[in-house]
Amino acid sequence: MRMMMNQNEIQEMLSDLIGIAKHAGSIILSHYAHSDQNIQIKDDDSPLTRADTESDTYIHEQLTSRYTIPVISEENYPEYELRKEYTDFFLVDPLDGTKEFIDKIGEFTVNIAYIKDKKPVIGVIFVPATGMLFYAGRGYGSYLVSGDRTQRLPLSTPKRELLVAVGSRKHSTPLDAAFMEMNHIDTIVSAGSSLKFCNVAIGEADLYPRFQGSMEWDIAAGHIIAKEAGCLVVNLTTMKEPEYNKKSLKNNYFLVLRDRIDPDTIKIPDIQSSDADA
Image (cartoon, rainbow, N blue to C red; front, side, top):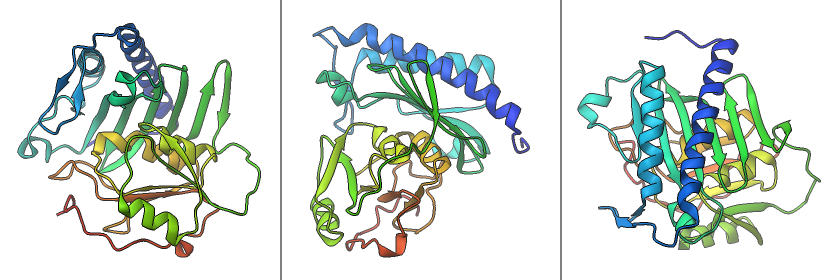
């Protein structure tokens, strides 16, 4: 079992993961302008493109050649009987927001997280279409790189009296509508992929409620980036932080809150557990 990482080790791994994520992003962009994406439909009805598979292959090869740490990826993950022994591992979404990618909406990302003892320690989110980069390490802080400028998160944002939420560009549910009504939220910013975590981490939105299905690789990098920016990430079934490498890799509904928001003031609609933590 590996001991807790020190700041130098976090910085070294971050450098590796950032480089890998950026190159994976260039692989994705090489397919972005093509009208023929060679789209396949997976068992869960989600789309899969050549960009997904090539990005995944590259990331997996790079991680396994540099580290003796297992990899769990959206496109390639072992059965629970094998992975239940993992004390630490990389959790990868090689192309988060495939539907945005197919529709030529630039809100798709490369997500790489390092997980230890069921919690994220390092997270990297790269946005190939814009070149924006978000990264964080436990106790290291959370950062945005845009162009030549690196800024620590959260950014300074004007104080506002009314709450602003971020939600999915593609999906909305009756629970989303109930949540917004219960909390008197009229302003909802739409975003794709893991960028919803980033919107809260930056301070552009105050909260991100998730009442739709998602998987562990969708949220791990965003989780640590938001947390290191001072945000609270809560599994709405356990009322604790999400944990990773569960028997089911499906997430329960969750909520991300900026540090300026008192969680006790937020009303949650009546939900049913997804049984992901069972």
